[in-house]
Length: 232
Image 1: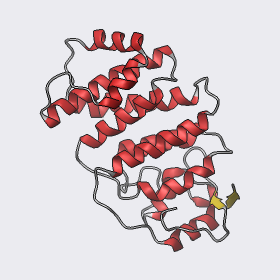
Image 2 (image 1 turned 90 degrees about the horizontal axis):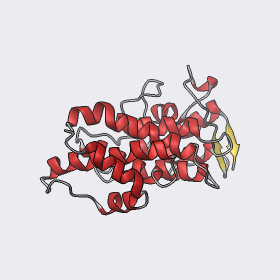
Image 3 (image 1 turned 120 degrees about the horizontal axis):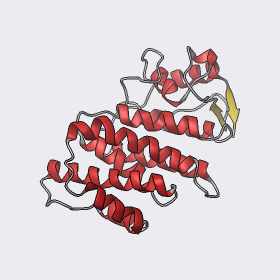
């Protein structure tokens, strides 16, 4: 748990859906992060990249009450994960879209396939790659949904993808569509897949920033006392 320990082994803080005025009213994933980071209580703290924070809020609200406390060990991992590098927006979009694409509904698959192609186009420009280059993960994800992939290619043909438009519209839409797609998917354990989506997205973002120190363990203990704890 990133060097943090609760007062009682096997106990995790209670995380709740939605936005809360203070810890005694409840705490969502990002509100808990704001407290650990020493910031003003908020579900939009400055310590985390806005798009990554959006993924965390959506997963927090979509996952079941039973599983939500198991997200808590991931909270310290988002603190300090922020960058102005647009590659972080691309990394988040590619990860969530590739994770959700195989299990999402047909309508959402189209949105996610377009998002992958748009993100790869941005990466073409940023990394001076040949137009139409795909990462292995994107190619594998699209190959699993050939109908949606072809629809997306037809839709995107001739369309221009600007960085500003991607960051403002395409990336947030992909994040929302991916989380909703997993949450509503006909799979045996959507909670596990939502957890994996968030964990892998955090890992991808962490690869793009400098290593950071861990939050003060005392603040973790204080936050747990405020929110209450649950045994898992």
